[in-house]
Image (cartoon, rainbow, N blue to C red; front, side):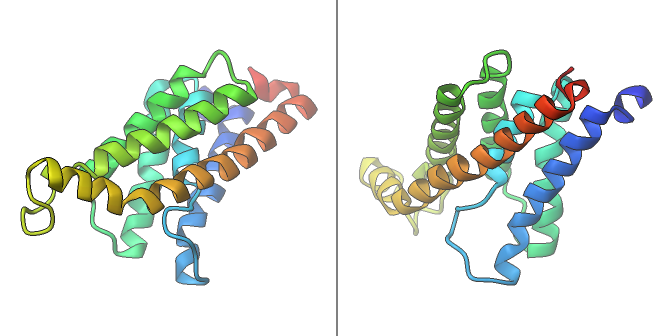
Length: 176
């Protein structure tokens, strides 16, 4: 395990993840668009790139937890569950990374996140009634956030996957 942690691939992937995770702190410094962050793309990227599946889950969830500490966000298990599903979206393209597959996993990950985190039964009945109308109201209210997450996943996914692809072409040892 120590050998693995010292590998150039692990170190570069970790550096990329740290840089992407830092984008979550941008709201502290500049105005931003809600849900347009790198964290979703980071979860997909981790699932697609880390050979050790445990690390694929740990890295983005640890980045979320650390940034939640600094941002003062609550640790919503529902949000963390949704991000684990996004890591699984990365697993699905692990052996067949291509532009269309990265796009599909970015969109699929955002839709999964949207469906999980906006299901009305997870909210207080005073916010959304626990019936079909409440479910629909919750999903309709969250559509702008879904659009922003899809856009964020696509933009940041392009940066993450693209930069790592360029690095692996320049330094073939990273591709192992």
